[in-house]
Amino acid sequence: MSHIAFILHGKLRTNKQLVSKISSAFSADYELSFSYTEYSGHGIELAKNIANSNADYIIAVTGDGTFNEVVNGVLLSQNKKVKLGLLPHGTGNDFARMLGLINDIYALKKLIQNDSIKNVDVGLANFKDLKGENSSRYFINISDVGLGGFIAQKLSGSSKWMGATLTFQWAIVSTFLTYKHQVMKIRTGDFLYEGKILSYIIANGKYFGAGLGIAPDAKPDDGMLEIIMASEISLWDYLKNLNKIRACTKVEHPKMNYLRAQEIFIETENQPIDMDGEFVGYTPLKISVVPSAVQMLCS
Image 1 (cartoon, rainbow, N blue to C red):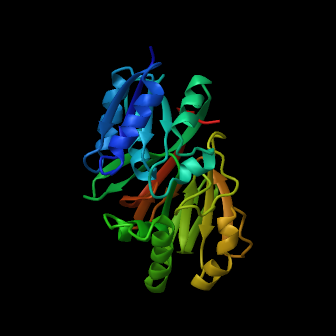
Image 2: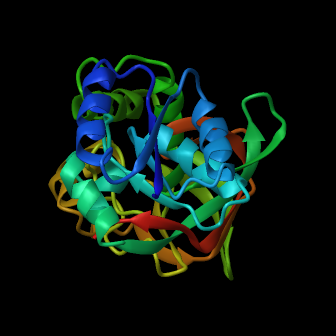
């Protein structure tokens, strides 16, 4: 009997109801276990230990931030056969949106029954952590510096009582009003840029910020990372093109550039970094793609 391990965000008010519903749907056919995150970073430890116990499936019942932790824990484990699933239950759910995953227990069960698996890439980032020490971390959706990094730093630990979309839009506009475009030095392959940056986004997935389709060409299984470089973009430029971004279409603007790369270096120091919606540390930052890193349940 296959073992399915569910990792739930410990602060979800509906955990008891979720466990009851999951047990009702799965317990007749699978061995089940449930774990709960208790603090920031706990998802990494839980997922690593569960994977090393030879679980067949690890399902994250979370949003993007805790899912990032589960991905990191799986990749740090010795179990290279474990299959990773996501039952979206957070504020953003941007990676789930791209893969067409919904908060439906029986849809998840069908994916498992059909062994519906896609080998998904991740990005490996090397940077300075919050203590200024050298660190490394995987991301599965999007990492960015510039405006996005400052927003993640601003929202770190804050309440999202307005909901994900309104909270993020408020954070964008309010940060825009005080943000000064940062001068950065960035290398991607043979391309070197040194100048002002509003936002520099490295994308494995299409969406971030609770549904903003910033990377229309991103594919999580092509061995490449999409880069969106917004240099001297104003708040007015952003607002004019917001509907296009929400529709996941490219913005036509002379200061917007779309690139592809397998490796990126941001040499400028002390710029805050957003990684899958979380503030994780500071530049300098090196990112490289790791192809087919995880086996992901999706249609």
